[in-house]
Length: 108
Length: 114
Image 1 (cartoon, rainbow over the protein chains, first blue to last red):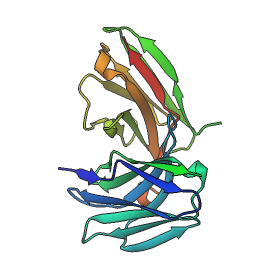
Image 2 (image 1 turned 135 degrees about the horizontal axis):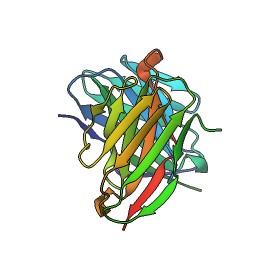
Image 3 (image 1 turned 90 degrees about the vertical axis):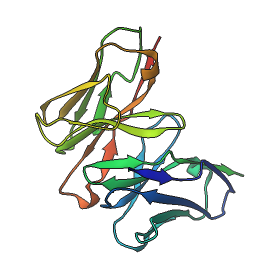
Image 4 (image 1 turned 60 degrees about the vertical axis):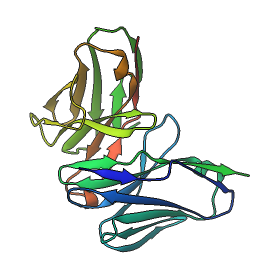
């Protein structure tokens, strides 16, 4: 079976750093994705990890440990526009399986 | 203009009616997908297609059918709509030649079944 766990909701302050964790148990692994989704809009691609380690892209970084079935998304210098849901997704053979998403609320 | 276009964007329909959601893409991708999103349940895969005439069931295909008559078009049908099919539906595409086979989503179609 496929199981992906993320916290339901997190809050943070503008300018701060926040880490969103994702753990997974899937039948097969071909990479892990992070997407950002604003309410009522389409998910947009943020990052992709297939090897262990940290991938940095501007204010956003994503980390993967395949042996632990664990990833995190790190957001630095938070801005109000970062308030959104963040979806962790694992590519298992043949399909992309999504977690239920973490809703991030950024306050002034 | 969006690379992945869905029509209609919003639709209210009655129980028992047939409804079709259409998706077209200009990205030239070979793979196309239909997902539905419900609060608290995340995105769930309904059907996917790796090429024209290729159809594969996803996690929640019951009550749905699809058609892939051309590489750029993938339509989703609800033969007899029921209220628990009220959801936000997303079409998506991916390119097997790209790193990670990243999925790109359309803007979404809000469907309400009353």
